[in-house]
Image (cartoon, rainbow, N blue to C red; front, side, top):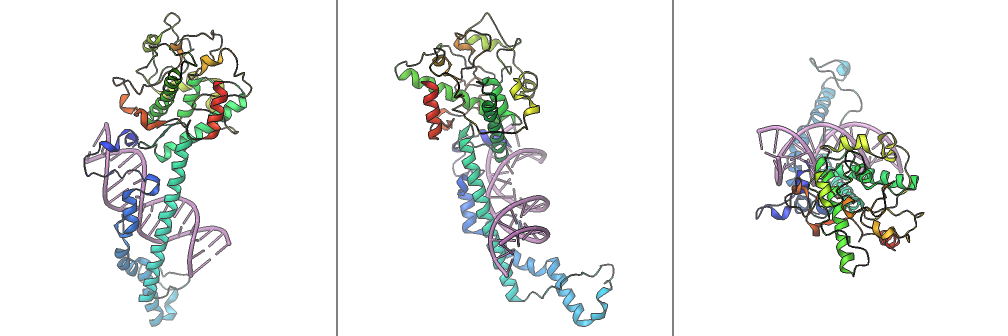
Length: 359
DNA sequence: TAGGCCATCTGGTCCT
DNA sequence: AGGACCAGATGGCCTA
């Protein structure tokens, strides 16, 4: 269950080990098991000794050997109701063979563990490059794969269309098929990043205009799929409170199905992909004029609202479930600031693109 | 207690 | 023969 995703392992009772995740394949639990494979689940090797000696095949082999020794001519006959086994005759499990078999099994188990650890390690690496990353509250394997797939697709679409995407549609694309908690997490991650960036910029001397101090922290993680959609827009309330009064859609599916931009419709979802470009949830398109006057205004997940003035109030920047909003409806799904990253500190490419985006 | 997620063991299959 | 890969089974941990 993804609930684990949003639990803080550090809050576990004293002495209670959080072994739900194999941290880089080196969790305490898995390490212990590596050291002592017999601690694993299921049949242990020690137990296997007897089991292998007595398993069906072995028993059959022994039966066959006995049969062979006693009555060769009866090979095609059945022994009672049980049909006689065909194929190569199994040799008797001598103690030496049993020992070899055990050794083989142990080696195979060890390899399998290593293989799974490698797999988990790769999955961890993948977690770090998808739009939402947390060291302590990881996405589950399946959600990581889904998110990665969505991410690739979304970025590919941006390249394909050459248009600055609608943030809402972008997030929706990212979250397509994800569980509700993960969707919250992703949205929260993106929002956090934007807030952090705003904070940084303001502290750096106001290189970029600071947004309205009452910048919205919307209690509902899912606004309507497009803020520009008629049912979601409030033309008369430009500030953050506007967003709070918006009707919101209860499920992501309902949002996505009806309102996503054409580029993100599900029919194209499985289509051919191409390489992505993305920065922290902000999209940087090469053909865009980064030096345009509007550019600075768009640093905060700013989306161009077609047909709307570029001076659209900051309150109209999309804000998802707030991390800082303790009283928010989905506050339980929100990660602590220090724990979340939207990988702007991970890849040189991101920095490069960031620079491009903010110049 | 049920359900989700996980690590591990295991045997089967395929390939070298 | 041995290794890689896979899927099923099992049991632990955790949360609702």
